[in-house]
Length: 145
Image (cartoon, helix red, strand yellow):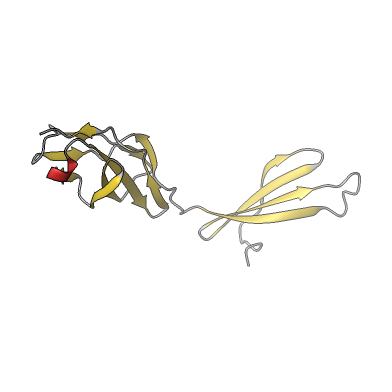
């Protein structure tokens, strides 16, 4: 049961109307908030919540991915993953030509004849145990002959 712990409750803060305490339990902390209603301090109302300590937050994009290359038919464009916080464990790449999906999975894209006159961009999605986050769309490369 979450409310039971072999360690004592530690006071986090205390005011004349509220008290917050926590205790360590396997895998996290249990917090309880005592709200004292008026002068009836003998019958406090409280709520408890479990907060796991081993939950990794989802990745956060710091710098938008960048596409580089010559932008000519037959050339290869390369998309950087950008910079991320919260240690992503994997990245997925989605290539677009004027907004239409044209390639998935790799950080490189071979420019096709059908891309001529269009702008090619890349979208990077980072994942870890905490979740998945998609970065804003990269810069665009206008494809020429």
